[in-house]
Image (cartoon, rainbow, N blue to C red; front, side):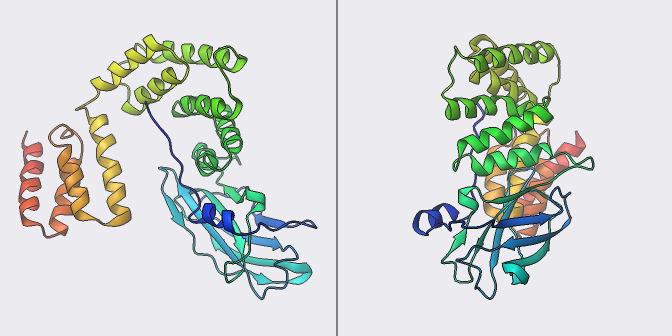
Length: 314
C-alpha cells in the first residue's frame, strides 16, 4: 500500500517547542502580492509586525518551497526592511519548479519567531485561470500532515473537489479523515468513499496497459476503504507491471532525482544496479551510463555502456 510522509519546514518543529510564539495584540501578519501567483512570479511581501518585532532594524522571512514531485528546497529571500506603520517588506521570485511555499518571520538572531500561531504563512501556486494547482494543495497537505492533521485533511479534500480524477489523492484523503475525525465503517464518509471507490474500480478494472501509478493509486484506495477482493485484484495488477516500461521508469526516475539533489554518484549507481535487469525496459541504462562516465568509474562505465548498447542493438 502506498504510504505518505511529509517533510516539514526545516527546524521549525524544534524551534516551536523551545521558543515563545508571538501573541497578536493587533492585526498583524504577512500579505503576499499577488495572492494567487503562478510559478515564476515575483512576490511582494508585506509584514505588519507584532509589538515584539516592530522595533527590529530588519526581519528575516525564512521559507521553503515544494516541487510537484515532493522535493523540499530552501528559498533565498532578502531581509525585510521597515517602512511606515510598522510594516516590513521584501520581494523575491518564486522558482519555476515551486508549487507550494511556507514561511515564518523571525528576528535577525532567530530568537523570536512569528509562525502565524503554528499555521505558517503560505502560498499556493495557481494556474492561468486562478485555480490552485493539484500539487499545490497536496504540498499544503504534506506540510501540515505531522503538524495539524485537520489542516492537512482540508487541503487534500479541496484538492479532490477540484481534481477528482487525480486518483492518488483518494486513498490518502480517506486515511487523513480517519486520523482527523476518527471515522469508522459505519459513518457517512465511509459509505460515500465505498460508493466512490466502486465507481473508480468499475471505470478502470477492465482497462489494459494502465500506468503503474494508476494501479497503485486504486490499490491504495481499496485498502483504505476495506475492499479486500478489490485490493487483491489491484495488487495483482501492480505486480503485472513489474518489468514494464512504466514500472521501470517508476523505479529509475526517483533515483535520478535524488542524484540531482545530492550528486552522490556511488549511491545512484548502486541503487540502479539493484534494479537491473528487471528495469531494463526504461531509461536506467542511459542514466546510469552517463553518471558512471561522469564519475570516472571505469568498471561501472564499461558495464553500463555495454548494457546501454545492448538495449539499442536488440
